[in-house]
Length: 96
Image 1 (cartoon, rainbow, N blue to C red):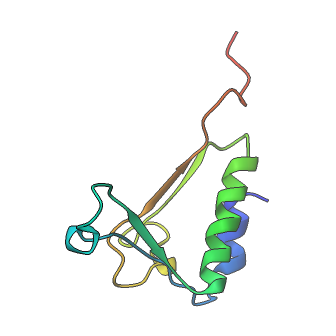
Image 2 (image 1 turned 30 degrees about the vertical axis):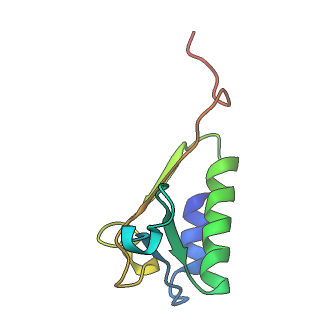
Image 3 (image 1 turned 30 degrees about the horizontal axis):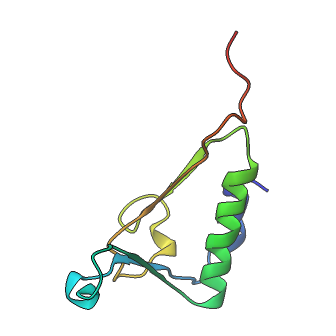
C-alpha cells in the first residue's frame, strides 16, 4: 500500500492526531526532549499504516503531513508539529 492509499482510506474519517513538544516544565525532571503524539485508536492506526506505507514503498522515499499544510485534515487544532516521514538506506538502485 502506498501513502496516497492510506490518505485516501482515512479521508473523511474524522481522525485527529495531536503532535507537539512536551513543554519543558512538564519535563523538568528529565534533560531529554520529547515529542507527544496523541490520538484515538483509529488515529494511531492511521499513523502506523502511514509509517508502514512509507517503509514499504521503495519508489517514493517519504511523506509530509502538517497541521497547517498538506494533510491538515488529520491534525487537531492543538497540533504544533507536523510529520516528515523519510525512508533512508540502500533500498534504491544506485545510479550507474
